[in-house]
Length: 215
Length: 356
Image (cartoon, rainbow over all chains, first blue to last red; front, side, top):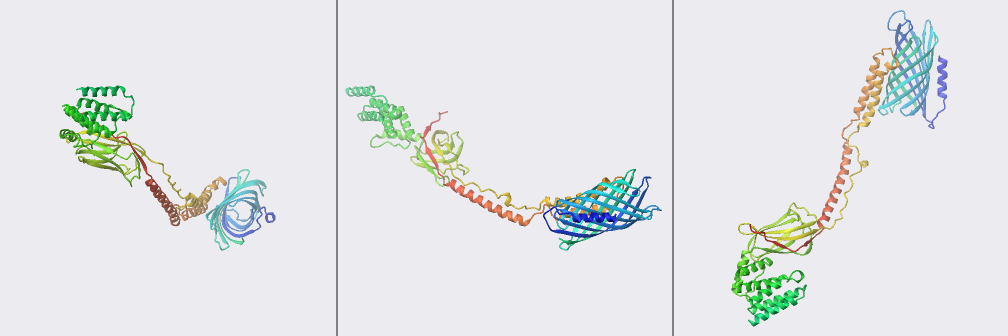
């Protein structure tokens, strides 16, 4: 999983710029969030786990082309019932995007999530297309944004199966210009579905503190 | 007797031999013959000749002064023929023809003068003299019509349209015996406005002591006004020069929309994306925050609030435009004031209403 994410990230960073603009924009962010994971099995039992996940983010922009990397780790524990094993969680994404409009970006790329338990690892992998839009509330200071994604293909291991998935993320982004700091409050929900009624829903509320390295 | 027959024969011959359509000289000749007959005390012949001289019409007719002379001689002739009623009627005709006429006391005996004066005093009438063709500046100049009265009496004078609508009252009051009275009209109606082009008439009504209408003098007037070149009014300030006077709603709505849309999406989309799951209340916290931020952004634009700087800017532009409009209006009014109207007077016409 880590190798796949790393390869995707490298591929994204190496993608040639489509626009004539040569300026690089680079920013980093540290994301802390609480995630709620609901796993529904074929036997119609639901496990609900929650916990903190910490994620790092890098966004690189050159002209109209954007690359975004996220990598996070955390641990979720059972909220209900007993005998549910806690899970270590590793998730990441490597997306390449195209800014069709200053407020509209189209994305494509893989994102994956791996649960590590005493019984072994379970990995969910999606290749998705995304649309994100943003609008200024206080231009240059505060923006709202929304991102909707749909998985084109996906897979899950243990037991191996093909999956479908989709999700949405929306929230507020604050820029503390002229300082190179920014912050983000976001809500995210996504769901992966396997045949037979098995599905995995992840919901998160996140807070991000970021730093603009180049502009 | 022989002489009378010769005179009548001469008159008859003159009547028969006189070419039809002869000019006024013929009437004057007949008048001269009538006067000579009067002076020769041939009153019957004189009456015939004088009446013949007055019977000429059109271009052959006697001039007004000659007609007045014929009438006074005819009145005297009828008086000496002991036709007093006829003499009185002729004298009244003379008064109406020329209220200013006075018989020469060196020519006519006292009884003729007395008869005429009696008739004149009993026949209130006026005549008018006005410039035949003139022009005035309405409101600045005056058009004068001079009235002459046969005797002291009350009159009322007004200017009216052809249809009889009174445009302006000119005078109401007495006019003296043998006096003249000037009626003046400044070219404006009773409201102080310029009268439009058209046909008008000065009407002078003579009243008797019982204030009954005994005569009406009507003097036609034709008023013509040349067209005036006026300046066009300046166009109001172009919209592109004016600044918005109130904070527009557009930017405020554009600031509200992203917040509201994101807030609604956060609340509603989990149902679409993760069907079958009950999303946690955490989304309401984020969605509410985004929505409140959008509302704050909307309010921060102060939509609809006046912008004093822009209001002052627009006021300066509009005031400058109003001053230009007032200046043009003033200059146009000045041009209109300076335009003269042409007034052409017709022939006065005296109307005597029938007695009830």
